[in-house]
Length: 224
Image (cartoon, rainbow, N blue to C red; front, side):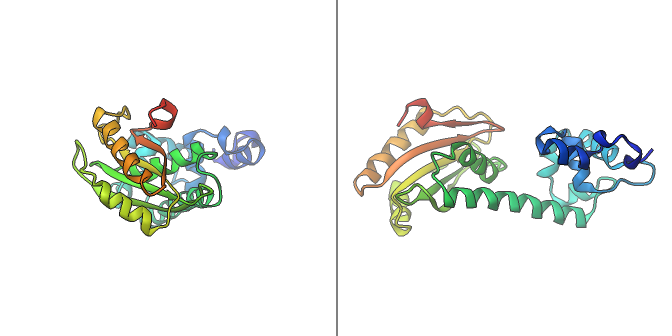
């Protein structure tokens, strides 16, 4: 039986149109992306097989081209399509932050930073440079380190903030361990950076630590 033979309210495309994308399972969303299955296997069944093979949707989305194309029913064309979809999602979030207040769109800000930083196997320290209305001017990765940490130079952060004519900044860095809990060193460097930027009237709005599927905000913890 093909998907066309299923009841209308069970077909992924019709279900999305009637109920919205949030109502679909990972397999159903992936099936819509795949469009078709392979001989004897529907798109939904193929999607389920792929999710079982990769373990989860995230692992599939983050697979490199070699891992991706080794799977039955996938190939370079699908890989290119998937990368294009993911890049459009990133640019949509970036556009949202550019148009609106980064604090009002706190969840979008966290999601954007998750997309940018969570996949790195080493620590990366980055900044969101904002204008006086808290719209994003630029996202920039400033320092890269090892699995355990990155060396951060306040002078360079100040230099970049001035070069972008920023009125405020949001710091972000990832924890390759997957745990988003800030360390004492994270608190200390944040205070050093905040003190340095206060001298040139640039506000530090937040420092967000990115883990594996979670994030921690210093502002929400009352640590700023």
